[in-house]
Length: 619
Image (cartoon, rainbow, N blue to C red):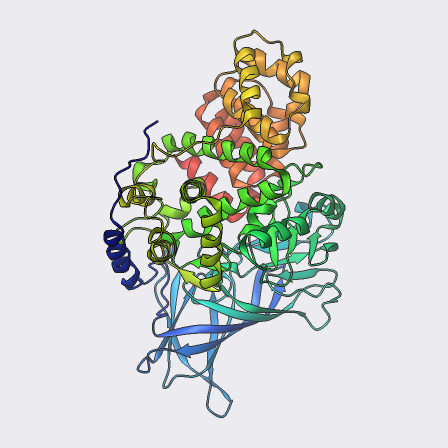
């Protein structure tokens, strides 16, 4: 491994470079039609009714506006598949009057611009509309797709630009607003939102919500269904389908400890409560950090709290992402890279350096392994090209570990006594704001490099931020417990250690994940069969372990079709589903079977998962 260069860029040179970057004007978000440099939404009120038969939300959105350009007379909002009934503005006397509007031709990715023509600059505008049954953010589930089979279920996933499919908004992380809502739902169903939720509410007259802290549109979230609630701490509760509530409450019992650990590192939790909802298995991602109501996949419920790093990650977003948000999706690493770094620090505080190191080593190993499948042009944390497609930075997962690795490098070189106050200051000074990479670099220069220029050179910064891959001088963590696992793995693969002699019964989930990652593509059918017979891996309750065993089995040709069929029929998390279908489709013997499974499973998947698997099948 190449050692860090000792040739340092002079502090004055760094200062000049960062000053130039910091003063550069923020570019318009290319994924939004909104002219937010002319007018910005400061508050949103939603009055909606959920119709499960038609799979629509119907009502109006009322936007409170702050006019920046005194000459502006047009309000442009982002929409996708919204049917607009009418638009009204509030005149000086408080009366609502009609306003003229038009919808642009639809773009397949961005949707349609809603252009509202105005005679003056009203403080409030109302848009009456209903959503489409195919709204990209919403999944409407039949009773048969839920645990009880009694009532339907609906949930949203707005990140990154899907909020516009269920509310006409300035759908960009550059704009933050407070919001309130009233939502009517069928009797016997609870509504929750990413806002203050009334645990004792009955829904009579509609479920009401208030979010007093300003959020970007991608953190708008809603779920409706047969939902129970359990308090698990002084400021946290878990919501879930009744049949899952007890298991969820047990799994999430350490939440208050995590909040306290994060506060000790990075300052007070500023969102009031930290509640969570465990959604049906079709939820397409591990978790979504919607403030006051994190959305979670049930695949993290293992029965032994072994996958709680997911909770630590979503909680960490309460500082990195929710509190300080990327100003556009080009700067996505400011959300996910920072959050991944903070997650490791929370885990270390709660469970010790040994456990944190194991999680970090798996993270780094998987990052290195992923590089072969990611085009070099997509491996940078951020592009210097102002016109680059921001989807480059949301399609790939490299921003998570690479961004965290960059911050860890700064921490290792500066020392925690210097770096921890630096990072906490970033959150404090930019709280409830949206930021760019250039702003972070300016903050880095002023608050760290001016005093400690030896920490990193300009060339190294450029390599981390704008270069492909992971820099060669990046220090990789080495877990001592993993070294012991590695020794057994090597001997086992060579046939020198019997399967029964593996110490795997005492391994934690992370050790199993490391082991299974490493034997994927190396273990024979006979070895996998014996491993399965000894440890019953294909029936593991831990979905991270089961997924990795299924993937290794498909690659080797070991038959796990019965269990894999059940897994693909019940789990819609893209992290699991896409690699499994990819592996199956590459093998002619498995491809036809996989297509048959997908034909049955597709209706159970979220629209985003359907779109991803459909794309695989078209190749």
